[in-house]
Length: 414
Ligand SMILES: [Fe+2]
Ligand SMILES: [Zn+2]
Image (cartoon, rainbow, N blue to C red; front, top):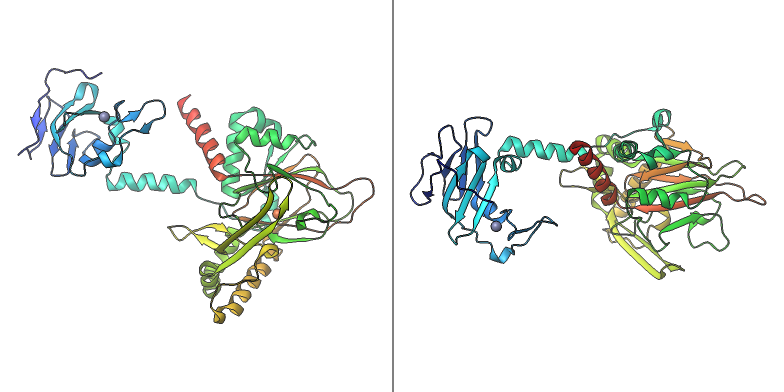
């Protein structure tokens, strides 16, 4: 509810260019051609807010749906040159009230405006915070000594433990949950604790057991080269879960893990020619077949090995020799060079200085960033009477990031 308070001046927009004071010690404002400038000589200093932005972000219940906090106003109804008819400020309530030329009234709290400041240093600060969340700690083989491990029961029962684990997952890209029940259904409980699993043509989850006539190399007992899963998806799974229900008693069956962002950093610093090829030339990935869950599928993408974001940083690694297509839509002169670059990357990945070897035990679950970490498997001998059994699942980063945001904000609010 808006309340007219003593000491308020209603000031016409036209011709006003000097500071106007709404009351003694008050919030001063200046009306410019396209923006409103506010100044209270305290922390507010001088802050400018464009009229089109103010009108666009009117928070009244006609403009924003209160429950969903979503904008009602259609863009076609927003006027680029919208102007206020009157502006007044209420220092006692720290409010700014704008009456627009069409009579619509918008009110803004001072703190609300401050949190959305367009001042250079505030914008930079917010961007740094945003990018800080994307920060990664890259690692080599020495990560095995202090690999982030968390207890399954803690993560399931305590929000602080869940937050701590998910933050580790985002930062390091590879974590282990231990003391998990050795039952195939335990993984679903974990996925549900965070968000929604990502379905693929293999279903909502998948079981990695050596099986006859496999349609994926994972379902054999042979070695699997280092790779990311499903690069033939344009939106490939952000996170992979592999829960060890049963490990082979025979030798082999170890998992291999390599930090793809670490490899990218090495190549960027020391091999610019390879860096150029691996960031510019697209590789085609494909998978075609049929699954009980999905019926026939035919997936296809064309992506460079290292995908860069607007800041020139790697945000996704696409490397999977098993499903790399034989069609190459690149200039003939680049073919051999690209092979050379890929072979260099592969050798670097298998360098013992970069690779972690970890044999999961029953009751452990490895969770890793599938857009960053290359994983592989050492072959193992099939044994009578029992099989190595991993239960796998995927999830999008959107789900994990959302859970982190929810847990962090509830911590701030409590
Ligand atoms: Fe895999
Ligand atoms: Zn409104």
